[in-house]
Length: 148
Image: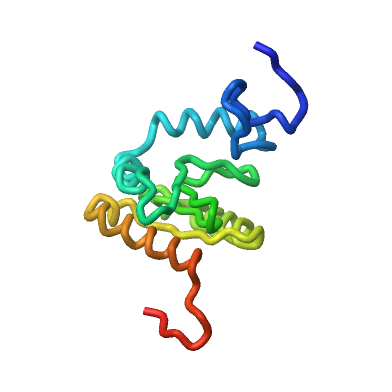
């Protein structure tokens, strides 16, 4: 295969055209691909609900950006979704997660963090809430309209 060191080629699958991970670090792309194959149960349940473009919103899983890999992303509205298991409550993880969220939000992304236990309890309802939020980002209420 023809390999290039040109950063504009990173994230492209030759023969399939341009890919949205264009410009991503190849190590991050490889890790994201690995994580897609090894999703946790809550991630797999949520992906089952989000993968079919609910309400026309396209979600991607294990989406890499700015050196991080988000569990899910709706690129159209710059929405990231993280499914947090119990490990996110331990050690310095809460502080690391806060810094990561702040960095991504400062870069113009919206972040939703969801407890894995909530996904396990009702993945359909969690997905519906995520999609509703994504749609609201795409179609924000007009001035003077009530927000529910």
